[in-house]
Length: 292
Length: 322
Picture 1 (spheres, chains in turn orange, yellow):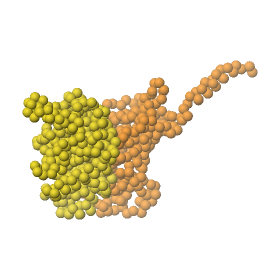
Picture 2 (cartoon, one colour; picture 1 turned 60 degrees about the vertical axis):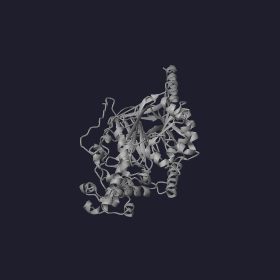
Picture 3 (tube, chains in turn purple, blue; picture 1 turned 180 degrees about the vertical axis):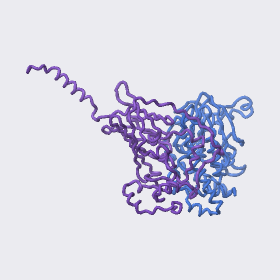
């Protein structure tokens, strides 16, 4: 049986070679599909919601701290705020059943854009892949911003500007409209990791980085998310709920509840790094109100 | 009178300075941004300009700085060959009215019948310039006195009520007076079919509101005007788009952007009000930094309108009401 017919093997080899040659120079891992959120990561912040006065781990400056100190959750009752979606840099964190799909130019078979749809408030976003420039300064800002993407190896890197003012944590920590956000969308088979890097010279002293994970869910059905503003609590038209400086009585609750040094809860770049754990051990935990 | 005129000229120079600093007066490049419906936004001539075009001709809201009028006209001609019929001024400052004379001359008022019969053909010369009567009062002067601006730049049609309505190019247009806000002669213009509000300097999203105390401005009027924009604008789905808002300076906005700005002005007002109630002096209020959290967004230590001047204007606005 030495006289083996090699023709099928050669044909298969040629096919394999042709197949390999057709793979793009960079191995792009298409993130298209239905993705379900996984809330094991940062669950207390994402599901029940963050504590008032918890600024730990966020590189905020003094201006951001005062914005957050002044924030009153009653703002969310105002009709003009009820239907706001999460901005694109935060949307991954919410009740985020995610769909990603792409537009293909039929003539060139090149990807023109990726789109995302997220369940809560149903924001839809476009990530342009065709190299178009970002809009001029005088163009409108949107909740999803203007995004362009490029492949870096098998990672889709997205740059977004023209965002409306948003939030980094849902307890009043702001992200300004001047921020530029970089996202890395990375697919590992049936898992999707999105790393968001917020550069906000207005309110952050360093870039703020966090990741959010999803799993493929081919059975996922995303329901519509209509929103209609209603008056549930009567506020005088034009009133803006907020706390005057030094007058927010809730800021110390987080420190007291978790027996943390109040100063640590005030956040800042230092509180992001592991070395701060050592410093924390040496900080007195006293009644937060007294430390304020 | 000399003193009054000097003050007016100084004020004029100062407010022109804002536009010059922001948008390169004289050598400015005019950018056109289609907003929606019949309305375009022109950026770079001084204050933002709105242009509405259609079968009836061209209507402008504001005219930019005088030195940019030729460029504005050239830009308008790129949008429409129709006759310029109306100019509406949102307020008196020269970065919004400076082009009035030249641009009005390039247009014609719709006139005929008894009007032309009584006045003659000159009734149709130049586009009509509409503004609140306080704009007229501040641009002109009593007989025998020197006016701060040339007669050709003055409004030809003034009003003194809360709202003046007109219909042009297939849509209703509301000219809504906002008393004692940026000045005492502010109007915002609402194009009802295009669904676009032109706010003038009531709303300047890149800077703290400019409160021209000398010309009747007041922080309470600014807040009332911003709330009026929020009241009449209707966002599309998920608080975005719908009614668009062209600010006096800066980028195109919608209601959500106005809400952010209104919140800021209201919060700063409340803080200063609280400090006033506690008997703090202006110096103490400034030292307390009531705008600290908004300074990176809206503040400035140099230039025409500084944070310090804004805090002082808020303080004086509120102190007057005590």
